[in-house]
Image (tube, rainbow, N blue to C red; front, side, top):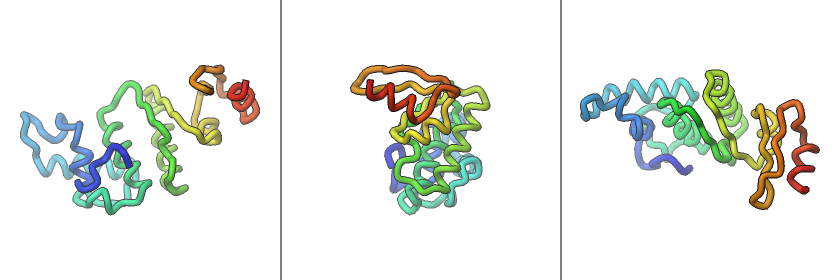
Amino acid sequence: AQGVVLDQTIGENLAIGNFDHVAPNGWVFPKAVQKFAEAGIRRLGVKGRPNQEVSKLSGGNQQKVIIAKWVSRPPKVFILDEPTRGIDVGARAAIYDVIADLARSGMAVVVVSSDLEEVLGLSHRVLVLSRGRQRGILDRSEASNVAVMELATS
């Protein structure tokens, strides 16, 4: 998975980029890393412990660690590129739940995906790109397999 340091622990990966949570005044506190990691693990349903190496996790759980790292900030816009590629159905459902929760909280979530069912299931709006060009934008009520494919092939 891109976005994690495989030979580091879940806690260390979650702490990267979140030093304001785990390193007040510039000093990293192991207990703060542990607590922060436990919260991220719970929120995303990662099957692992804060002191476990990320390389020992499944691909789906590695993906959850990446998402947990960034949603803890929280950004105004969250861009996910192929967030569920290569992961199992259970991890996929958990990631979909997190994406929906983020959108409900008011965060703008952009999902880039080649999985049309995923796009249709998650999106309020669908922007169709083909051959490097924007082909159209569909609202959820207009978006369907047929409508998207018509735009993609036009």
